[in-house]
Image (cartoon, rainbow over all chains, first blue to last red; front, side, top):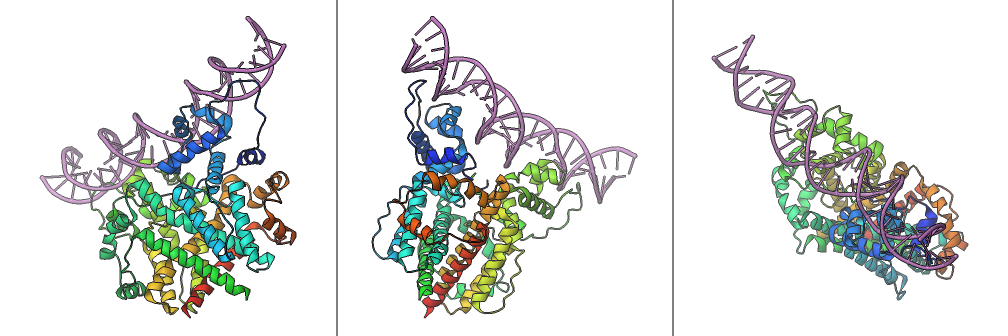
Length: 251
Length: 251
DNA sequence: ATTGTTTCCGTATGGCCTACGGAAATGGGG
DNA sequence: CCCCATTTCCGTAGGCCATACGGAAACAAT
């Protein structure tokens, strides 16, 4: 399926939900069996366990022992529910502003990575039109404050911000993708690659791929550690080099 | 919906399709109405026009004026079809090895970006367990050859490779995400943000977000150009800084 | 007990993938 | 010309999904 899209609905309604605008308790009428918070929590629980694909309205309602359509009283639709889920888990990062601007960005990357690890379905949530809730906004503020302290020009800060944010989310998403696939298909990444041993035997052409062959012969692929560990190493390397570049560009 | 997952099926069968292993023409039996190539082409056409979500087996069959189930004679299932589509469009990059290693990586990034622009549904295809076909492999070889020429140690080349590949695909995906959403929802990114003006009016808190406020006041967000143009600028900046860092790390 | 308000939820529509198995087409041998 | 092995075509059916609609049920105030 294609990536989950969020927030097509009425912006005012969605924003009120994201910021949980307190509404005066209704004096009359039937008492609600569930709250928005309960729905969001249940939806996150389902997605954590079985992936975003399994997070259907029916499944969440079942979790809460409520009729499917009851959810629509509290939440406009599935897209908005996903927005609420995403912002909720982004709030789990506790971002303490300590150390140099670089250390703070690394801290931000770590915390964000932890969110993706805990909630692998975040890979499937597009951040191009993000939920404008407290979870997202607090993160933006944190990164912008760090970059502003770095000495970059204001205009440069905004450009660097998009690059850093993109790298962090992209890296976290890729890294988690492997685990999500493992959970969804019941096959680990290492096992998947192992099953494709045939490829190297039957299709790989040393004439066509000299650089890969040379690297292989040089022992560049004799790594210890799992696929996941190697990915993590690469991403740390990438972020460090990106920050090197940003730092160097200021001088 | 969650991201499209590929290639769970029999590796040997999928590899044979990806590399179009020629099979001797059957002397007897009913003549096929469609070929694998026709199916892949039709599927790409549908996805280009209406998104990967609309690319159903029924829709592709309709395109070819053939019964839905006929497709399954030629292709094991939908996941494998997506693998074939992805590898086919990756083959559209013509990667000519000219210039310095840096220029070649930039060239690779440009060509890959062009693929995503032409086929926005690539955003929804996971590259963690990629289709091991010629399109993907030629790209890998190209990047590895460039990095090997940069003077990095073999082990470092493989680490840098993951970082670069991740950045390029991630950047291309993000950039295209906006257009894909615009096409899918009929609302442009600029218009979406415009409709969320309410947010700045009703929810944004200058006390809570001093860094953002300061940047706003400093005119850092007074950009001309569309959202898409600004994203493109940021991604170029990010890739340049990443390559700066890689270059600097060698000294 | 009635009324106004709010929430709950059963039903129905139209979509998706694909297992299964029979129908239809094809070329060769009698 | 007929038969038959072989191959492809494809209708049906089962079990998922989101959500529009409208009536039933619960509750407070009168």
